[in-house]
Image (cartoon, rainbow, N blue to C red; front, top):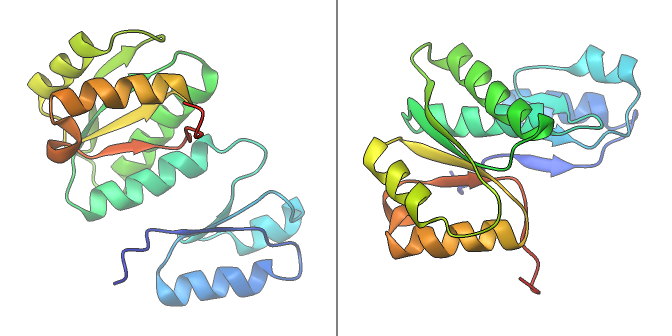
Length: 169
């Protein structure tokens, strides 16, 4: 166990079968980018291999669920933006988590915009989820993490996020 949760890589039609077989043998999720055709993707789909397609909400939800449930987590809070992609990530995290553990559930849901996250972080801390799914890129993520660090949230509750903040934020 080297701490690897999953592999993300680009694999076209030629590499998809090999990647799928490798992931099943090694029991390491492999998420491929959407450059294999649908027929090849469907033929090689498994519990450990999938193609993120043009929208990654299912991949994010599935990957987070696999990791969270493997760590014994049964609950999560959502903090982030409102919108279809974010809702999909919440839904898929819960669905995929419940496939692995029927008790996996969402504790609370905070739809936020940029600004002061102090009250939200305090509320999350008081609800005691096993993990937090945060969805907000760039400055939103930075603002959330600054408030979270004031409460020592990342040390107590793991924060899962699929967005990146660049060096300008």
